[in-house]
Length: 158
Image 1 (cartoon, rainbow, N blue to C red):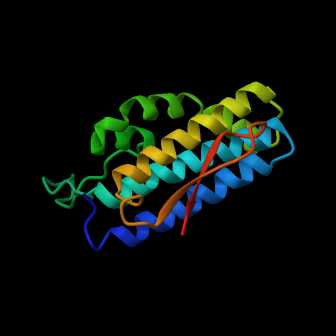
Image 2: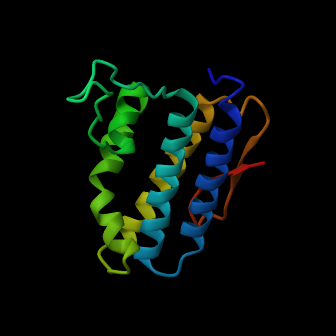
């Protein structure tokens, strides 16, 4: 369940995820579509982290008696710890992170089929995140359908 102090940032991140998904659907090239869809999924993961993660400093002390720094971890790695129910999604999207970076750089590294598949997978993931954050129950997220030739569903966060 999402606390009252974390609900707003999580919903704002869902808005961003939806925006990226809409960009992916409207993109003209497969690499643009792939990059935008992956970014939408990453923003949905960030919504979960905003709602559930607690930053804990290691207070056992570093060499100078201050807190030690933890290594930088990907959002996908943290997601598996914070929300284990999204573990399979995290593994899936983490595997495509390098390809997304290439696609964002404008390198045509994905096929149209790969991009379309990622758009659909990102839609499913964003929907599951929204459900887990109770955005659907609260009436802040609705499911709409597109024409049969375009991706089958997308979410609108209001």
